Image (cartoon, rainbow, N blue to C red; front, side, top):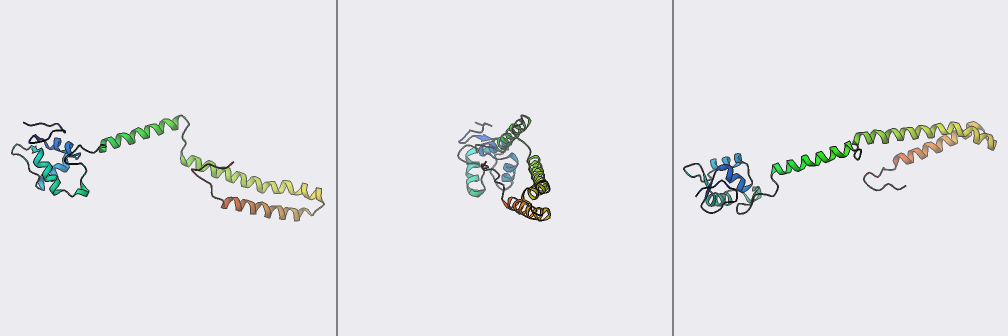
Length: 171
């Protein structure tokens, strides 16, 4: 009796494609095995029992994709591709819904905000120094120098502090 069904066993024969599905391989890989000595019936079909025995005896156990005595691997390359495509579709939908944003967009926004805040603090020195000098009776130039140094030191300290990406940001 012959069959092309992947789950057949015993002395049944299957096509090369059927044998490939049985082991979780590609038909091209089975053709390679035929050239390497995989026994083939005169009609070009493969005896399942003899084919599995040859596979067990001739293919390095570490290089086998499927179990010769069991079912093919649970996730074929097509299943993996389908799962990846589904994940990509979910990510696109999340991005369109506004739940997911592009990494480059986030980096540009964070860097832009950092530059804005740095310039605002440096500008603050020139706005605050006259008021502090007037209220305290200090020399305006001395107040500007001290405030400028303190603000730039604080900005350098903040710049050296790593931004916790992926963790909860303390508020």
